[in-house]
Image 1 (spheres, one colour):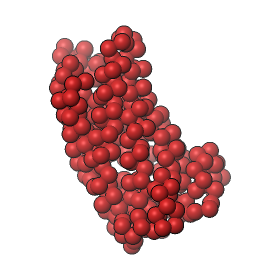
Image 2 (tube, rainbow, N blue to C red; image 1 turned 45 degrees about the vertical axis):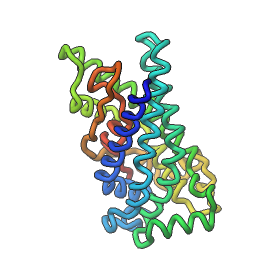
Image 3 (tube, rainbow, N blue to C red; image 1 turned 90 degrees about the vertical axis):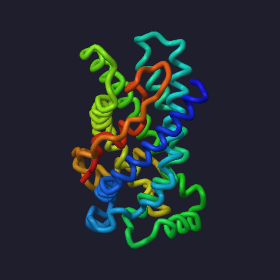
Image 4 (cartoon, rainbow, N blue to C red; image 1 turned 90 degrees about the horizontal axis):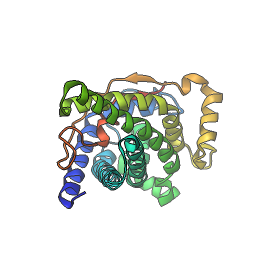
Length: 277
């Protein structure tokens, strides 16, 4: 991948991430409150729907850019030595690397954001200072493992499906997909991936919101899922889908034709987001 393409991917992914995260933030707040252990109403209901937005505004660009640039570079390196039938594997590996790197930025932002979303009366910066005072830097990375365990399966489902749908649509119409068509493919792929990985997303939320010293706060995903099963059963882990709209689709210039670039946001933010009751 050429330096100019890398900078284009960095800027496109970052800007797309900021717009998607801010536009869909109210839906994300509703999802977090539905997944919180105290329940939707006690977590704030529909009040303070933008609680925690400063954390998202600050972390969104570097998070999306880190994923986008890692994904595109790894895909570019692997693509040279891969045959067509190995293309899905290339996308899976590239997406996994992207998630591991992006989560280094995403998790601290996510911890502060989710705690603010379930405590709308407390400000974002107050929650940040409280977390650092009581838990230190380690507290900001609580849930890193559970986030990676959720995001990698998400990408392993989403990206190969997204690329497959774009290739199929391109073949059917005889030319490469347009940006809006790529976004539609991303919405479907992301919605399907979200539905499949929702139990892991709920576990991640419970771990990040757990009180210090509790079992969930240890970061054990299986323990968190077991607790949800015991207290709420299957309804605590099975999702219903909530439309979240389509994301902008930045177009990469290079060897890939227009409309075939890979944007993290056309799956996550642009997909059907998942809410758990």
